[in-house]
Length: 359
Image (tube, rainbow, N blue to C red):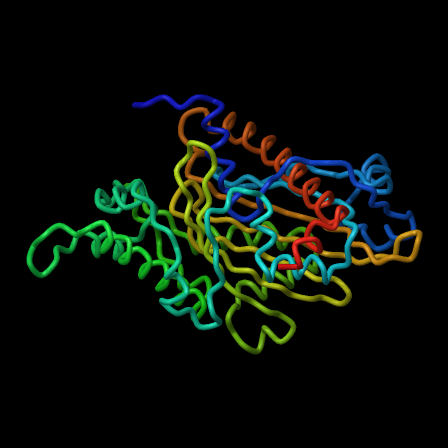
């Protein structure tokens, strides 16, 4: 069996987080949090040193305990020099993923996903080769049983599918996944059949939601809304859309993902939940929640305390030395969350989005 170096292994599992949140080089920030603005944040159980860090514009990042063996989680808090509305605009415009520099292409789906929405989605030669070689229980690309069987179905003349036809079949699969999720939510997620033991995406998200809900009553209400999506009676204070992205990280395989953005409000706080609907490599499930808490700075400007939580289930954990691998991955995830928040602080403080026309 091919041995994977510690460095390349760490790069690979980090894709699970980068699918939803790109990381750029951190820079200093001038954001400040007054002591008065910390009132009502007891649910974060902040230590005095962490409070001091936030007051001075620093970042708090820490691991979160998880019961499932292949799940890692971390939480980060930071002050952002922008109002929550500006941050929400970043998500709606997809600037939140474009800024990392790894995005090859991305696009939003319509409220009812259409095949035309993925017409511009690039399918690499490497991905086509993986699709051609896919077999039940032995596939390099994550697919469900019906998708793998579809790829193995010969054409009417018995000829092998061409590169262009395989690429189009894959786009149709992604569109159907988006369509199923938009109509059925979590119940529309089929089990992955790329390995001998099928991975149950619905069970994975049930575990992620359960642990996230335990953080606070507000998080519990948000997770309940996510579980019940797309029931209309539960979505009066929410908005939701799906997007696709193709990202490339160095020499690693290109990653194609489908993500749901769910924007929800609870009083003066806004929440952005990013749920990984599909990824062709590395991550089996992912839930990233940004809690946006507005406050007035010492100069009277509206700023945001962002509480950012990431939970990732990856197929690269488990097996031999699973405890050590999880411990190492957890530490790396905390570092990645910290760097991602530092990048966001710097971007908003520098006015980079405004200079780009708020695209």
